[in-house]
Image (cartoon, rainbow, N blue to C red; front, side, top):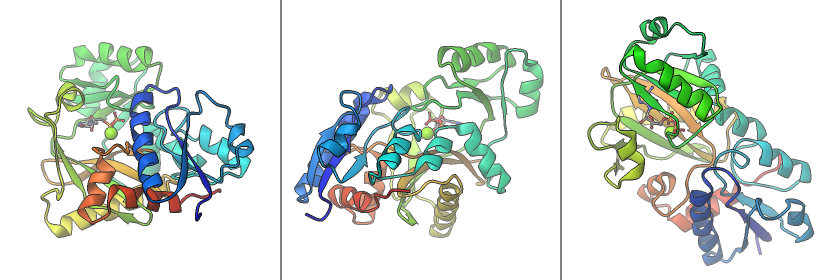
Length: 303
Ligand SMILES: Nc1ncnc2c1ncn2[C@@H]1O[C@H](COP(=O)(O)OP(=O)(O)O)[C@@H](O)[C@H]1O
Ligand SMILES: [Mg+2]
């Protein structure tokens, strides 16, 4: 068999465990339907050394969040000489950190919203003046909009800071608010797939709605003129590579009122359920979910 025995790494112990199990089970079924000798492997229940003992030859990483998407697991697999899918140690680690990701982009002249790192001693009025209102406060290392606040008035900044910094024990990142449509660009190998436009009800800014109701609409094709979409795809691919990412992933971005793009973040191990965004974009260019899983698996690497 072409790939030998394949472990689909799923579950894990991060906050996104449940989504990872859904992603992993989808991938597992798809790979098996293509004749791959694939097996589920949950690193929160088994020691990684069992990968070697049980003669696995490569890993499909379907873990999300800390411990699976942040470079630590990638480092362990690397040390074992076990080929794995997606970004390596460096890209995974930087990608997990929105602050460092922004520094890489800014150093290369790529557009990402203006920001500053908050600390308890900050002058909140000065922060609001510097970034403008409304502004966004979010933890630098969390995902799924956890701990994110849209701040309309400087008086709300302390609570937003507390949430991001204390509740999520994280670095609190304050960012200029981008008032425009939101997109995500899926990266597969050396190409960016068609953009998906994400339309949350009541504008883009109701995070509760975005994640806890089914009312969010996902449009692909995204409705932008072809030329503009191609430029954004090229920007996303460049942004992905500058951070050191490879294999596959997703770049979240927004356009402002003037139509200028702003990069928000990179996701190095995005959702892979049947309803997830990368599979949606792949379908639009004729790549089935099963074929997508195979292409990602083909990209597995060490180093
Ligand atoms: N600077 C910003 N301006 C406007 N909306 C934002 C901004 N940053 C984040 N958002 C909104 O919050 C969502 C989550 O932010 P994001 O940076 O992608 O982090 P994550 O997806 O890891 O929670 C985005 O999809 C977008 O809707
Ligand atoms: Mg995001």
